[in-house]
Amino acid sequence: MHIRDAAPEDDGLISQVIEDAFGQSDEADLVDALCLSGDTVFSLVADDAGEIVGQILLSKLQAPEQCLALAPVSILPNRQNQGIGSELIQQSIVRAKTEGWLAIFLLGEPAYYERFGFTTYAADKFETEYPKSYFMALELSPNALAPLAGRVTYPSAFLSLG
Ligand SMILES: CC(C)(COP(=O)(O)OP(=O)(O)OC[C@H]1O[C@@H](n2cnc3c(N)ncnc32)[C@H](O)[C@@H]1OP(=O)(O)O)[C@@H](O)C(=O)NCCC(=O)NCCS
Image 1 (cartoon, rainbow, N blue to C red):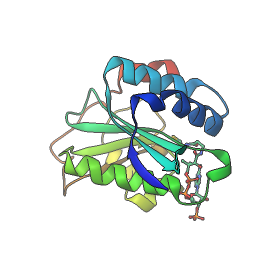
Image 2 (cartoon, protein in one colour):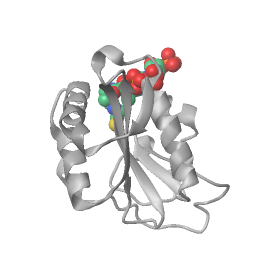
Image 3 (cartoon, rainbow, N blue to C red):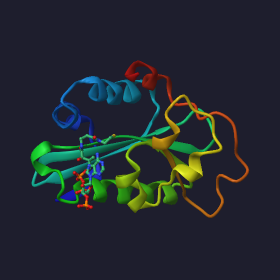
């Protein structure tokens, strides 16, 4: 199993992985919309001998500046709890740091995402329409979010997700 950048020819398989993971098509539609709108920063897949078993997408927030949104992460149901999601998230963090982004925001279960360093505390001073108890951030360098404030604005494709 290795993690690599998604290629254009992976699109159909990626949509299937996302639909299978979530049991609905909304998140796959979101990924398509983010790619079409040009808001995708990078998309990684977990490739097991040619089979795509997981995918993660990082997109550029409209605000705060130089920050990313992590969503969605999708692992095929029969491949969950084998560390694949963790590997995709860890490699995304490394990639985002290398590219010089300031922070990553996400909406998710703290019980899962805290292990990667995300905290609701880091996101707390920012305004959002999402529930604060699930709204998390990870600074990619010490105090990267200190000078920033205001509303976290997702790419417009997220509006259709509800
Ligand atoms: C959530 C998801 C991405 C995690 O990936 P994964 O490869 O299955 O998880 P990993 O093997 O990396 O980690 C397993 C650990 O995560 C925990 N975990 C998995 N999903 C969780 C959730 N929704 N909430 C809290 N903990 C969760 C497991 O209990 C396990 O904990 P442990 O290490 O303490 O035993 C994957 O299960 C998935 O695709 N789920 C359906 C889609 C989804 O909900 N995506 C996330 C929102 S964008």
